[in-house]
Length: 293
Image 1 (cartoon, rainbow, N blue to C red):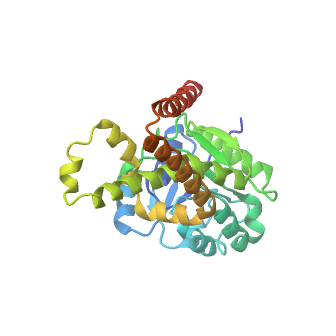
Image 2 (cartoon, one colour):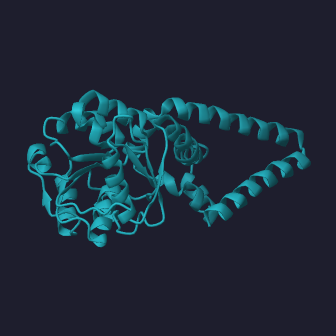
Image 3 (cartoon, rainbow, N blue to C red):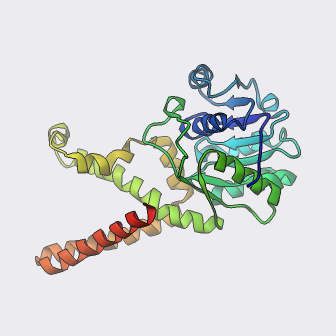
C-alpha cells in the first residue's frame, strides 16, 4: 500500500463529508495542515473551533498555494463553478479529487476547466453519509469499513490514483474502481431512487390528509427507518437528482412497473402471487445482508 503524508490538504465544502475526511486523516496522522473553503462563514468558524480545519482560506489563490491535495466536497451542483475557480490556481502536482454522488457531470466539468491538471484529477465517491449535514455532523470514523468508488479517467496519472487510494484507505475505507457511467447507473438504483422514494412518501402522507401530524403520530419504527433519509439536505439531493436524471428516470419508471404489478395482484386478491413477491424480496435482502456481513 502506498504511504502518503500531506503537508497541506484543502477541503472545499467543509460539511459532513469533507469534515469527516479531514478528521479521519488527522486521526491517521497523515495530514499536517488543513485549509477550509466554504460559503458559510458561520459553518467555517465552527470547523475551525472543532479542530476540523486549521485555517479558513481568504481566497482560492491562497487556499491552493502549495496544496498537496484538494477535496471537492460541496453539492455537485456547484462543481462547474468551483472547477472554474480553482483552475487558474492549481499547482502542478496537486492532486484533485471529489466526493460527489454523481460522476458524469463532475468529469464533464473537470474536462471543461482543468486543462493539463486533468492528469491529477481522481473522481471519487464515498458510499457513506448520514441524514444530517454540516461540519458538526462530521466524525473521524465515518468511512471506516465503507466503500469508496474511484472512477479515474484515461488521462489520470497512476500515481495520483495510488495516492488518492492511500488517503481513503487511511480513513479506513474499502476502495473499488469502475467506469463513470457504471457508477451513475448503480447509484441511481441503490441511492438516488431510495432517497426520491423517501421524500415522495413523506409528501404523499402530508397531502393525503388534512391532519398529517395526527397520522404520523401513529407511525412506528419501520416507517422511521424507511424515511430517515428524507431528513437529508434538499439542496444536495436536488443537485444529485438533476445531475443523474437520465439514469434516475429509468429507475423510477422501472419502480413504477413494480408498483403496477403489485396493484394488479392486490386488485385481483391474489394472495399466492403476493406472498411469492414478498418472499422473493425477503430472500434477496437476506442474501445481501449475508454478503455484506
